[in-house]
Amino acid sequence: EMYPIPLYVLKVENKIISPFPFNFAYFNAVLLKFISWKFLPYICLIFAFVSYFIFYITKQLHFLTLILASLGTPLLFQGLEYSENSMLLLFQALGLFFFFKEKNKINLFFSAFFLTIGIFLRLETLVFVGGFYFIILILEYKMNLIKFLKEYFYSLLGVLLPLICFFSENYLLYHHPLGARFVINQGSLNNFVFAERLDQVIHLLFLANWKIGFFGFTPIFLVALVWNLFRKNLKSENKHRILAYTLLFFLPFIAIIAPNDGVTNWGARYLN
Image 1 (cartoon, rainbow, N blue to C red):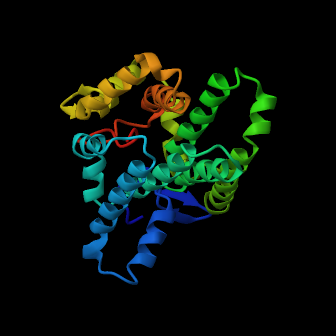
Image 2 (image 1 turned 30 degrees about the vertical axis):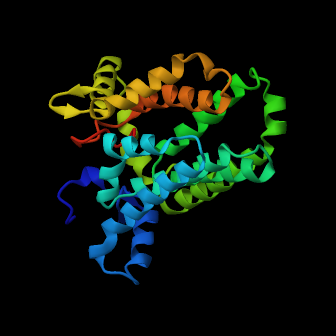
Image 3 (image 1 turned 135 degrees about the horizontal axis):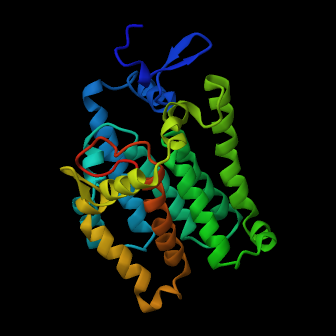
């Protein structure tokens, strides 16, 4: 009753609950036992730089490319604020670190585990991971599901472990496996109008109404993505090809299903 905008609260069993998952807040509460709140943004900055270091030791990116990524994308800005994005980036970096290593049981499991565990922070992770392994199924296995499941069995375990925990937690807390954010925003999915969604895609990916979208804020990323898709030796670099096609699927798909334009003017947070 005290909250001025009832749209942004969830009522479960006569309890008023925030639409934002408690996992990041719980991490903050533990952290604040040891440090002052003034140092919280520096924690995210540390997450960002550790992520850059992990990307560097994968030996897939040149050092100058990492500098360009930090200065020419929202990554550095999200490291300066205190949000879940930097922690999510760290999980994704760890997942890609194991992905680019030798293909064995341990690397398959931990690659899938770290790529998926970010779902506790942002729901978009579910779309990214689903698209990622679906692209592998298409490119590597030509839709041979049996062979894919046999060779990526440990990846399946790595995906299922965080997912089962995530779905169970949300069902117990919110009576819905996808959690509070989905419950609050599912009305926008139910009222799907193609023309409005197309307009939203332009907002989120480029520029509209004085708001800068993902490629509007990071045009160098668009150049890099297009270059990766069309360069001649991409077919011989299968893992790079998998990532490139995953992003080609992920970015417009999330832009279509996102509940709004992100309400920020420094890059679309749903896509970052």
